[in-house]
Length: 145
Image 1: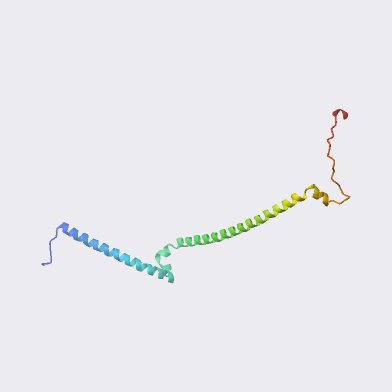
Image 2 (image 1 turned 90 degrees about the horizontal axis):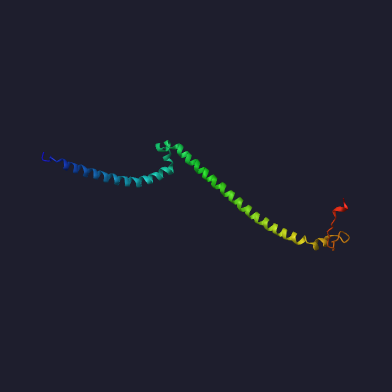
């Protein structure tokens, strides 16, 4: 019985606190080690599909399907936007070509609508340009009364 000692409350509380600190340190070390090991295990579980049978995955299956649906929608939206942008680029190029064609045709029209060009195209015995300036005819009101 020489191993038995009587301890004060303070001493027993100090010993309990020291033991709790030791256990807390051990838990921290264990969680650090297990987290590094569980990371490797998680990769292996993902690779062989073992995680699909876990309870947490089965419980969250509707949310997983929702996330999968959102991913599919995002991928589809990306393809749609890409095709719209390609179409917009081709329309801009076509608009540039049509604008240049419009300006060339408009300049040709403006050069060919002059009097000299029209007169040159008319036949020799056809209508001729009047070289006399037009005069205004004024009528007095009392003539038609």
